[in-house]
Length: 285
Ligand SMILES: C[S@@+](CC[C@H](N)C(=O)[O-])C[C@H]1O[C@@H](n2cnc3c(N)ncnc32)[C@H](O)[C@@H]1O
Image (spheres, rainbow, N blue to C red):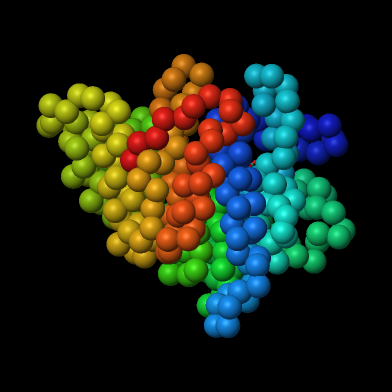
């Protein structure tokens, strides 16, 4: 069933963890822009951009409490100081149409909005930003939509990344099925077949005695972070916020990845307060 927001346009159904992840985005983007928009020194960056290639329609509705709020692209557009440019995309043209209608005339010149697959869109966007651009990417999939190669491309540029890693809901839940077939969506997502050697994979295959589910998810997150370190994201949060559902099942980790100490320091600063004070989030990684 189509979900409509109060403006009559398409909205995304959301839950409590949606608001939590978006609170982290709002806080980090604000702190990032406040720090970076100060006049840079010679030879430093010339432009500050935001990238969101799975951006949704721009409005979310928490269906549990019937509360409406801005999605990631509208949050990023409202950040002060303003990003110089925002590169937004979604595979679903209906989301893109709804978002386009929500972007004000005043904001339109600083937005590039496309319909398409994030794993293809990225090449065009990276071509159009110079090596002297500093960026923040928010990559927010539901599951396995984003290829590891796409994250690796971001790692080659001066871009901080907030990535919603589907540790519990995606990887852990599907591992057994993926192991049963020679090719699976996990291969592109993970960037190879080495995931088959992980403790969790061995457990799913029945060849390991490891039984602690928390430990197993942690091993997945650590292994993925290590791969991201190898492609260039040298500065990472080792205690990524973990989102659980209302039955306390582990769902996602919000990975923070950067190339420098300043970004990581800013992230650690904003992370000290849990999102909206709603509930404390455990962090593992
Ligand atoms: C979790 S939602 C994003 C929500 C959004 N960040 C927000 O705050 O409302 C994921 C979005 O990715 C889109 N999507 C799925 N696969 C995609 C792909 N391969 N490339 C680009 N967008 C994709 C979906 O249409 C959906 O809108």
